[in-house]
Length: 79
Image (cartoon, rainbow, N blue to C red; front, side):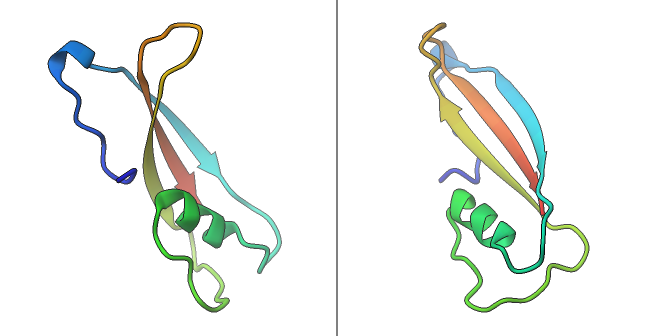
């Protein structure tokens, strides 16, 4: 899935672009559920406050129209 870095053949080797995204906001608005949905994991069924910081990494392959060459975005979500 999107949680693991996709394996491409050597002819299609794609550069990885890394972004760290920090989510902050009021309690109970759905930050953790958003990250879980983007990561392809089930959202927590009930509300509980996140203690400290939960880090989730998602690899998102894309092919920008301008370059036509595939790029892999490594999104590090800090919730």
